[in-house]
Image (cartoon, rainbow, N blue to C red):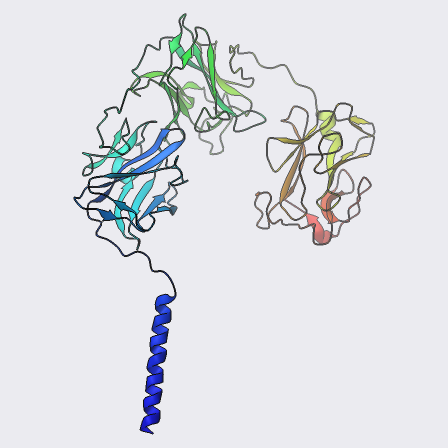
Length: 509
């Protein structure tokens, strides 16, 4: 009996030892925390140039520090945090040296704002905070640094955070002192902001700023900056003129967001201020302030209802009228690169007949994939120039060629994935993805008809799991009756009258 008990005890001991061994071998533990005393975040740059953000770490001690597993975490203006860099095993930083992690070199991909709230934390492998930077807490909610500047500890390595005008990656921070040659402020007499656009009729992202040289001599614009202050009073540098930039007498310079010249969008309705600044940032060359310069009630209201009807419609602008010398007005006909004459456009074509007659009638995301248009009028309809856009994008997937007509109460079938508009539209169409198809008049702004298959949760996010899946039973989305009825999931009726759908299959949005 004693032998049997001893054998059981030995066996139990072996099981415990085996279990402990398995636990130890079950994963690779994180690197052990070091003594990180003297390791600091020393400088943070959100825009050395339009393409580069970086972070500098400094070892202020007299010993080498092991950085294995040390992490960098970003906390954005919404309070969302993410670890965006982890030092690899074996990484070290020598006594008194700097380590610069650079977006341009691929060390990390997240952006760091030079004007919005941002937090950067240096964390140990276990997640304990070694050092941190918080824009709002350390510098104030209105703090920002210019292009080429940074947030830096002053004095270097030990001081509180400051905004400095000239960044010093991999070197000691210097208060407002340049690294290398700087561009001095010049004589900007005659340089004015002349016109500002927050988006065109066909592309909301086509924002631009027009500068005019009203003088009789060429003006050197090297280093001249554009500051934007948004509705939340956040200021950021959205442009810095490269060295050698000049503007001839009487010439215009148009800087576009779509061309990569402006670093941020400009709202066409929300309160916004645009300032043209000297290279030092100390001299305001010219300024536009929507709330101060645009008369209330002369424009359109923003979505928050705070601008006093001072916004411009997409396809319009804010412009000096008379050109160069006048006050600011809301315009419906922008003139980028040309004189603002203050005239309004001639009335465009009348699309009322087209809008009353032409509709989207059926969409099929199963093979054969197609969009069907229908003419509900009693006469043939010329639809040349009519545009179809998909998923809210500005690019057209179909433009009706010249001579395209639809017979009275007739159909026009447009096949998907076609190489030219002669046979159909150029994009795909899926029965199992959320989609928005919109029909426009030839001017690109007059909406004639729209179809939406929302996401299951009712949101307008396109290309995701839809509320109405036509793939399940091989169904199309169709109006019943043709041209005037509601939309249903129903049997496809290519180039023919639509079949009636079940009440349960009615499509709404």
